[in-house]
Length: 321
View 1: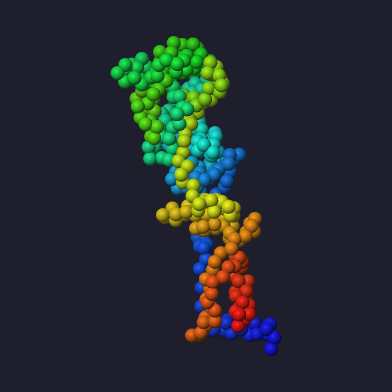
View 2: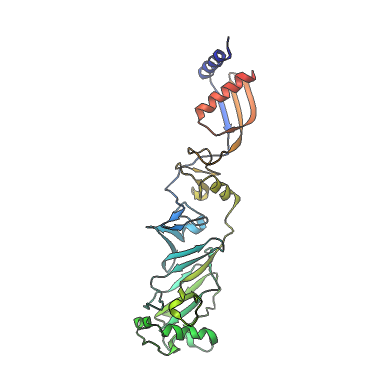
């Protein structure tokens, strides 16, 4: 009898008897909630950030999210737009819509940064408090909260802007109501409480734009550093398979989000889409029926449809016999 006939007979026998078929593989699909994206509008979104809940690292998801194609940063005092991210230096720039600039000054809210967050202020920030009361604790000589010397020129530069009229001051007003603020609080965790400090507005200059004497060219925003130690080999493997790193479950464990709409605990190879490249995995197999075991071995295969895998195993069994 031909080997082909033997193969079909054995297939019929296997399907007619109790079959124990065990596969131990590296991929364990779990349900996915929502979809993750690698851009938000025109801005690239890379780990540890994510476009929404379940994307990126869980320690960052409460602070950063994509909303209507705008990447936003949230703190206890408000929601701020992220205007820049430098993934090589681990820094980003956020902008407060109520923060004053040279072209437009207005009454501002307070600003705070959670001490427990994976973010900290960088040394580039120059916080300036504007339109402050002369009775403000800022001007208490015993507190020494306002920088003197070269940085006091920042106040004169800002008060030379036409926008200063927005907080009720004339252009080129005396800088006595302005303070280049030196907070006594460490950079990990920060609070700028304008009502307590009795000031109308604030701004932050993170770069003079090559012209310290021309406030029109200054760059306004808050520069933050983020903890880049969250990136792991597990995430690297996920990204190399075309997936996006995220998290899932009540324990917020690592999940690789695949284009097929599934999560895995490792990578997206073999998850229903054709990727650039293939992945080979060790799989332990065992075929048995009745009290007899016909094959127990370890070998390497490429991921494929379960039906094709079964027929392949049957062929290998017949060949080995």
